[in-house]
Image 1 (spheres, rainbow, N blue to C red):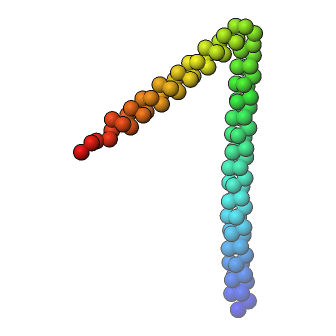
Image 2 (image 1 turned 45 degrees about the vertical axis):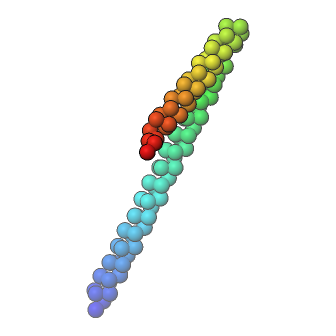
Image 3 (image 1 turned 120 degrees about the vertical axis):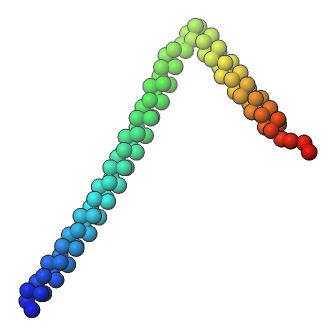
Length: 97
């Protein structure tokens, strides 16, 4: 009877060890995902900071002022073009019965 009790005890200990290992694996994967997201957010913020610094350096002085206004007008024109064509597509898709 002692061997049966010992076997059941070993089985329970093995199941407990397996459950603990699975739980540790889950937490390790969760920690890896959080580290990936943190690194990704940090990289995106660093890229945005580099782009802002690039455009700030590019648009300094008189030539930069002219270039900034040119790109500003180009951006406003592009948004206007997109908005008017989006509105036109919405109107033309409606059917009058």
